[in-house]
Amino acid sequence: MLLRNREQNETLRFYFQLLSKTIDVNQYPFTKMIIENSITKAEYERILQLLEKLHHQYMNQKDDGFLDFSSLLVQFAGMLNEKLDPNTTVYALKKEGYYPSLMQEFIKILER
Image 1 (tube, rainbow, N blue to C red):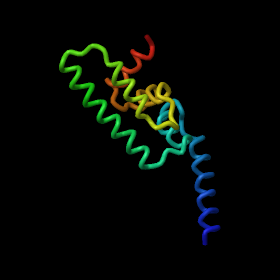
Image 2: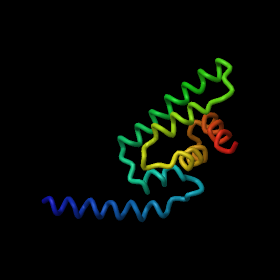
Image 3: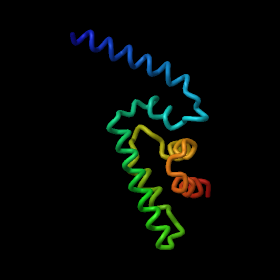
């Protein structure tokens, strides 16, 4: 039974690799990164929780009159799953529409 489960897992992994090649990288770059880097469901959920937390911090800082959000980008990079490159992830998140105002701030910082 263990061998059968291993074969099934390898087959599923192969199918996901094939499917990831069919994803339009230009339209869904973050989704493709998740698949290609074998991010688990729990890891994915932690990324989304991190983004939600940072977005709230960004909105609060913006309301308080902050102009520099570099500390949020540093926090993002430090807490992001080690399987993902922070810079590439920011651009991919922006492209897919995740937290557009926060990602735009991050991109402004990255492009300075």
